[in-house]
Amino acid sequence: MAIAQKRTMAADTKGAPATKDDIRSLPATIEWLRHQGLLLETDVEASGDLDLTGVQKHFDGSFPVLFNNVKGYPHTRAITNLFANQDIMDRYFGWTDAKDRTKKLAHALTHPIPPVTVPQDEAPSQQIVITDDLDVNKWLMAIRHTRFESEVTIGSGHSVVTGKYFHGGSHIGYNRMNFRWGNVGTFQPAPGGHMWQIMTEHYNDKEPIPFTMVFGVPVAANLLAGSGFDYVVLPRGGDELGAAGAGQGYPLRLVKCRTIDAYTLADAEYVLEGELHPRDKRYETAESEKAGVQGRFHFHPEWAGYMGKAYRAPTFHVKAITMRKAQGENRPVIFPLGVHTLDNHNIDTTVREAALFELCERLQPGIIQDVNIPYPMTDWGGAILQIKKRNKWEDGWARQFLVASMACSQGMRFTIAVDTDVDIYSMDDIIWAMTTRVNPRSDILNPIPGGVGQTFIPEERLTAGAGEWTGMNTKFEGGMAIDATMPYGYENDFMRPVYPVDTVDPLKFFSADDVRAAKSVMKGWVEQLARTGR
Image (cartoon, rainbow, N blue to C red; front, side, top):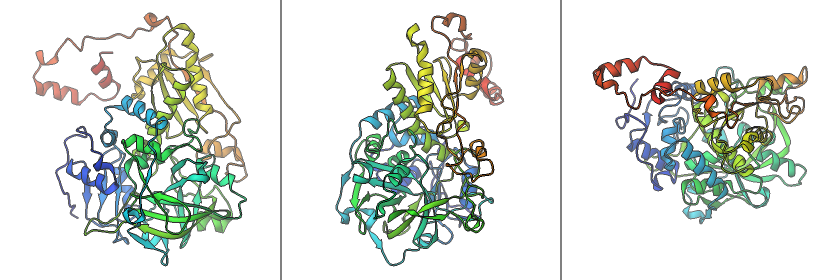
């Protein structure tokens, strides 16, 4: 097999940021990635059944991967790993580093740039309108992540809701679907999420809920779609599309739908116009339906690093499929998100980190310095808060921030507070801080036991016992919050050694080749300690 690689790959992922024109649409971003040498590209036929996610896992955290030849879908292309590398993601938006990313995005969440509406004839997403051939799986590529799943699914769609159904604001978020009945598919609203809130409020309405599912959207919209369970900062009625506009520096574009009373993204690649029927509930897989059991059969991996389960879900009835018109080889492109990958993790946590930062800043300004959600902490399962105490009175704010973060984030299980001398992007440094700065009798907290959790974590599912593993039957055991900060005024007793790496140059003693060879065998925490002298 040969791969068609259009340009030489870049030596590293650092470099100049993308321009506004480079991120106005997904095809524009792909062209920018290609030009920058940041795109793995292949013309070899790839199936959505295991091929895409298998390749993606091989390159987890690396370059975006573009598949130009998707089996069974000659009209489309597919891209993965779009957000897998944080250096590349930062270049989309001009962020200089992780802390800059969190602070600027936190500002965007509270200073939205509202979207603008364009005429239908100016919207790429409506260049083709289909109302009579609505077999969704024919047009939109479904994927199977693992061999454990009995069916393919579509997990790459974003629900877009504006206006009265979101109390005058705008929502965009991920929802998985399985179109087992042509134009009718299951629609999974995560319990407690925005779509769950919308569905609950309108559950008994006589009319179904009109909105769209969009695919292949601008990167800013895609990033905001990953936000979830941070609703003190991003509440119902807030402007998530406006926050995406602020993140990219200019407004997103909306367009009136063709068949329903709703608006959608003008610069999406594909749009499903349809209606949610909350009371028309069906099983997500035939296997689960045959057994008549929810929460037992594998379906669609989850962010926590475990296999998901099939449930009964409300259904989404498609009224029209619209899409961008192909121009030669520039066919519409879909972004089939692989779950429990760095691609997924970075989408789900980037806005969440900013929201937690903003939450702590609202409680007491100036103390929170940064927030990180490491990959092994899982997307919504935990967070690390970095704080700087300025006086003795602020000693207690570490615990206030920890408990508030957990109370305001449904299902968060593990949160740690550390000082500014601890690298929150190094799990080794975090473990060291917990080992040396935590009083096991007073610094380990168990907030909100018996509160509302998330059934995506097996430990919580087990509380259902012999009952169905659903949200109604499970119980949240609470979370663990750890204050790994040093008491204010005792900094001298917790002083870390700093070796003279800034003044002693190894090149004075050894050749550059020798230094490079010696450094190449250093792995783990020693790399960070050698760099900082600690």
